[in-house]
Length: 114
Length: 115
Image (cartoon, rainbow over all chains, first blue to last red; front, side):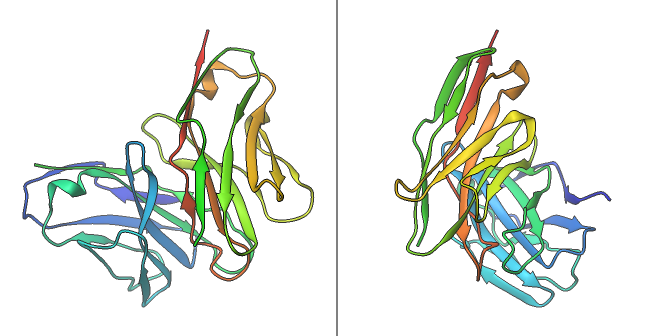
């Protein structure tokens, strides 16, 4: 299993540009999520999905869109990039339900917005 | 709403010394508790978790944590650290049952092990 994969690893955008961060998992996990990590802030939840066709907002959703058309993929779209979105983005997946399941994290995408 | 406080942002220790990384949480419902580790330029991986039962939880790489409900704490310990334990450690909480996949993270503790 490849686990959780993210592309690209690094990206530089200019203010106002749009882009999509890709995330895929091959573990048949129902739950997928996106976090951003900023120095001294820990990880903050952006959006999450409990299955294909179902998404919801997390703690910091503004400026980001998601969709979930398949179990495997959960892309994150930046509609109009801003310098405040400079961050490291992590995708994670897990089984869903009441079992307190481990979340598996991808290697991250480091985004710089100039 | 739940929250997590990691009391130390940085903890420097010498190799083979014991270490404790402190974590307190607040929640109005029962919780699941987790410790994740992030090595430089990598994603996070699970060290250990507490769901229910014994309050002392053992994880990978010789780490353990103790759940203390009365003090709402979940401190991480290791009796003897190695250089390779240098990493950032995150405490996280989710609701027990229900939406237990939504994690709230602390701000992290950077553990630096010096020779």
